[in-house]
Amino acid sequence: MTPSHPGRADLLEIKKAGERASGLTRQLLAFSRRQILQPKVLDVNAVISGMEPMLRRLLVEHVDLMVSLVPQLGPVKMDPTQLEQILVNLAVNAADAMPRGGKLTIETANVTLDEHYQQRHLPITPGDYVMIAVSDTGTGMDEASSRRIFEPFFTTKEVGKGMGLGLATVYGIVKQSGGDILVYSEVGRGSTFKIYLPQVTADVPGASEPSSAAGDVSRGWETVLLVEDDEAVRMLARVTLERSGYRVLEAGNPKEAVRTAREFAEPIHLLLSDVIMPGSEGPPLFERLVQEHPAVRVLYMSGYADEAIVRHGVLIEGTPFLQKPFTAQALQRVIRDVLDAPAPTKALIGHVGSD
View 1 (cartoon, one colour):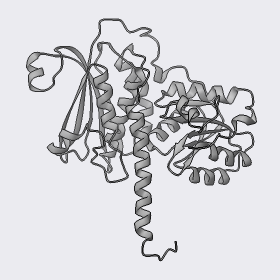
View 2 (cartoon, rainbow, N blue to C red; view 1 turned 90 degrees about the vertical axis):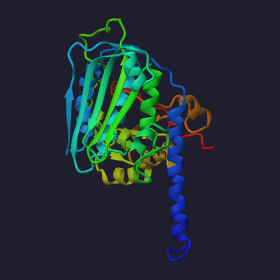
View 3 (cartoon, rainbow, N blue to C red; view 1 turned 135 degrees about the horizontal axis):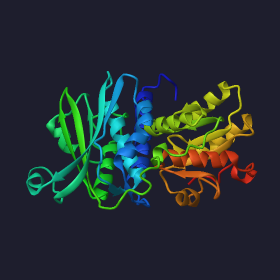
């Protein structure tokens, strides 16, 4: 179709809508799948402290992060990966609400919720809770938006800027962990999300040890080409890798990745790529990359389960794979394993095909 064809603009809009729908479908699958949870007794303060450097780098320069953690915070029991996911989603949401800068505050407190509070605010069992409050000085929301903010697919962002699953995911995790969440917001003044997680009586194991987010880091020096269409995931991975000593080249799609690789004159040691992205897949990208960088290795990541990826012929069984969502520690460990492993066989370079 020629550029001057009268139907070209409409077809381009249809194409963009299809790409947005593709991304939405992938996020929905990640949102709705049954994850294997590993709940542990946690010190929430330790998790937040361990993530603080990463959160600071995740935020844009003109957003200040303030952290206020109450001493002797009660322990909670939940999957630590999911707690990290809550914090990242809320931080990214807050940053998006402050395009011109502002302040993001994360606070913790021990609270006791009684029947009076239950009747007025939350249908939650009275008792002792850990409260995590995440506040921003952003654009805020009106009452109608506040009532719908946790609905899947509801978003106050412009078309193409958000799928409306981030806060719905936060809500689902909190509920799954036996807690609840409230939002207070005022247009032009900002928003506060208050999460209540039930305290447990068990002691936190290894309380004197560093949290998972700040634990042992397998450091490296190699160059990693990071390809991920989800900006929040891409930023998290980049921050984690740079903090571990790696040089990171990043791209939001395979076409951009190919261009970046061609412009980079030095060796690329690892391709870290989402398996399925709008308009392409990770394996064909790796096949193109290995022609110019023969020694490059690959680690795929996806919200789909690895068994489903193999079953549908996208990856060959045995190809290095990391399930989303993942912790910083898991990413560091798996990347080091892939780089330190013997050279892969050619059988794992390609892919079987697509549906």
